Length: 251
Image (cartoon, rainbow, N blue to C red; front, side, top):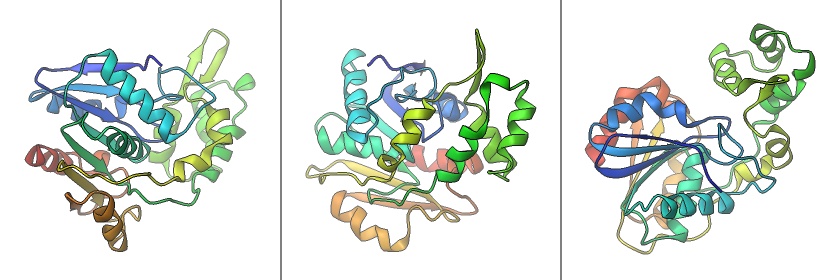
């Protein structure tokens, strides 16, 4: 699969993977700063952004996409950074390809299985009738019945684009809706080589709990965990400088 990507800077390669309902431009501001030190690849994962849509939607498939991307672009020993769903993709990739990366950074997601918790968001997105939609404001009003937080709605509605026949979703909403359970799947495998791994969590997020640390250490024995205060799940958006400082110090 030929994934859409943005390339910035020069130096050691650093691949950044976004989360569910996200896209490569979610990390553009941080990517620009990191590109002063690294060659940054901001990648749209399958069924997201400008990358192709496909009925197959699983972490193994997305990890294979990443492997193909690295081979297509002759990337050697990249640092791989992933947030949420992108973090799960990154974890599965390094567990399957333990010689093909330099360091791993996982932002606010653990290797464990999670219960489905995006149902309300999906119901809200699916409730928007694109065929009769007149404006983004109308879409926001409809979505607000399901998602009261304005910031979350703004993030989600970045996926609403205009095509030749009117509004359309950039994400593959039918496939994500059908296969949303896979987003909660845990990773498979264990890191058996001595590579450096960093986990970053938001203090106000419940994605990585203290009781998850033993599991993280079992799968990634070299892992370090850093906590960003006053930040939730979108820690890179809420506290971008703190995340940058941690990433640069680690690298």
